[in-house]
Length: 376
Image (cartoon, rainbow, N blue to C red; front, side, top):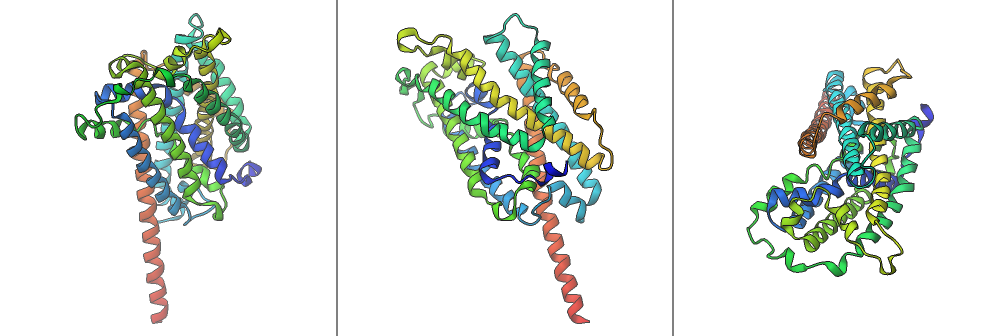
């Protein structure tokens, strides 16, 4: 455990880890969710606004983290005026959040795999096999998970974007017009919908404790946010341009359907959607492993600091499995995902806000103590 804590994450590793968490499921379902919510082809504008907002929030938290390098946000709370109970309350919230994230990742994986690849395989078998592999990854600790992110994400992006690029000749840019035809109101609705696609930045509260003080910079992290934002824009624009806005509304997973539309000259490759799903599973595997790892880590650090339970990862895996099958349909899954998204947003703003309050109180107390000392 000490070796795992002593492992230092580089800015590149942190940036890739954020990208892994953000892309996850969202890249598959986001175009249809935006089309249904906005009823406008201006979803790409909402994505860009949301990306800029997330970059600003990441910058805000990076500046806060510089106040306590080598510590998690929960650890900083424990030592400050907010104390142990606030740290425990936030820790409980993050446990629920990361369990929810892992559950919706698993459930979405099951829906996609059954719909496009293994239609005769029981849902429980797919979920069980997936969770067994992610649990094994968690057993390798932080360093192993970070290295998996470094290994899988470049492959996923290269092959995935390569497949989607074959749709460029089929794009009808007229489907994207008019721009802002219904004003800013749909764009603002789209920004609200983008809470879920940008889920994952909360890992900063925990992973940045493993970065050295001179590496606590926002620029590399925001570069990752920029890449994710551009990928979201590309997938959304391509979905609307190829299928039209009305068609995307009724397609559950437009990104996979884009892969189905690809026809490679010569017929050398067929069923590219299967390849697309296979490489996408690499990303969702890493995102689920990170969520499981952080759930176990938070419970150990905040609730069981002096007791290490060997069976805790297995228990967490079982809980995730049960919760994953609470949504019975894709519609229920989207509702569940929205709840998880709002919980994540609330925890992020509570964490950053209370962190800055704690810093302000400490600075005031230190100034008061210095004044008292000089008067004596």
